[in-house]
Length: 209
Image (cartoon, rainbow, N blue to C red; front, side, top):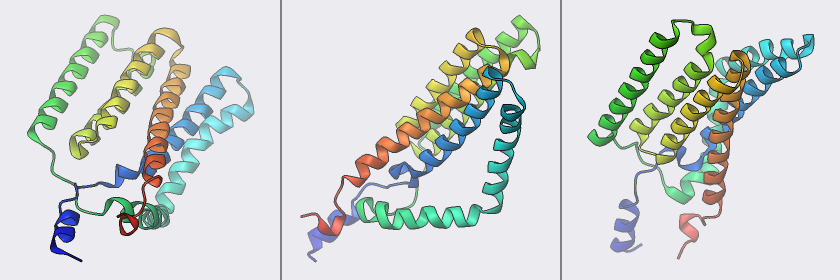
């Protein structure tokens, strides 16, 4: 291998594990599953749907906690097979000052808006659950955007905020929570699927001319 070829490989941009969308698919699938269970219980109340809404989140969380090492190993194997041969593997770049400043501004705006809404409507947290759920998902996605610098995470944050505001105005509290979870799950899942599809279309590095 020539020195130019080696230098070209070394100059490849830093890639993070989210470059393949696998983690987003997992997170999105779980959120969508939880949201569907909660929404079903509100739309079609019965013992079965109530049991699903109560059990599904608990069972999946316990499974993740108990089998997290096996899940991580499986994901790592998929990355070794699909991801690293196509994009390489390096450490995550540090968050820039611009991303940190943007996240701080976003957090301040969200916090100020939430405080104003609480002051206006009173501190009735139960009726504000859809909006608070949307804010929580938005803050989480924004924090990941700050750490990783991946722009689609900011899109997920904005969608979560929008779904929270819409659900707060259009649905009862518990149904609104399910709606927000479904929107968040769909956005993460669809985004991850698009990224993974694009990645798998790339030829492995050793096969590229």
